[in-house]
Amino acid sequence: MPSRLDHTTSVKIVSVPTKDGLSGLPATILVIDEKTGGVEAVMNADALTAVRTAAGSGVATRYYAHPEAKNLVVFGAGAQGRSHVDMMIAVRPSLQTIAIWNRGEKRRLQLIEDLKKAYPDRTFVSANEQLQQHVENADIVCTCTNATEPVLFGQWLKAGVHLNCVGSYRMDMHEVDADTVKRAELIAVDSIEACGHEAGELVKSSKPQDWIEMGTIDADSTAKDRGKITLFKSVGISVQDSAISGLMVAKAKQDSIGNTVPF
Image (cartoon, rainbow, N blue to C red; front, side, top):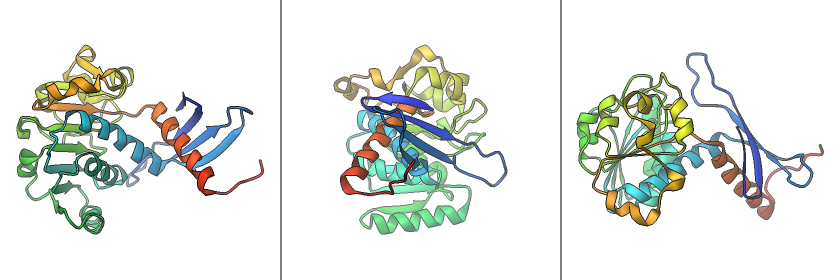
């Protein structure tokens, strides 16, 4: 995944595990020195990918979610799930109750315990036991799973809820059902072209001409869409990797972090 943004050129190399039991997408980012053309930095991209993906959702949430949102439901207890909780709280500090859904109990309960320590002034609960009720009360919902069958259903959504759907990245992956997409009154995407090839849920139940690309949105006009059911779909675009890797290289140099290797 090569890209260039401002003064940063980067290439992210991503592997998609095919063996059962493996989760996550192992990745490495190479940042290219624009003067020499050589490799300037090598970084583990796992955490960076989670943060930059959640940051995209954060922008959409800032645009469309209720300013005083109180209830959040997050599907998925992996790196993306954790990053989305952190980012949602950052852009909507009003959030009070966060419910976590995950198929595996161990990872779900561990994330809840970690979040309780990180945010002692908020309530964190498991959503598995009363999922429909939690979704019906949610102001924001984030789906961060690798599900191939829907885990979120449109009939549960209340008016004005904002959705961030980031887990699926193939045409056969469907985190949300067709009703969810059809009930969305506004659909924003990170890339119309990329989503047209990778966002199975959207392609199945909507048309690209009805999608809005995030880079074209006028931030000053988004307040009129609050109160609608809004959906942001991200499949990940490489320019986000250049954005975060360029920032990290600059901070590493500033703080003298990392190892310099003769090459």
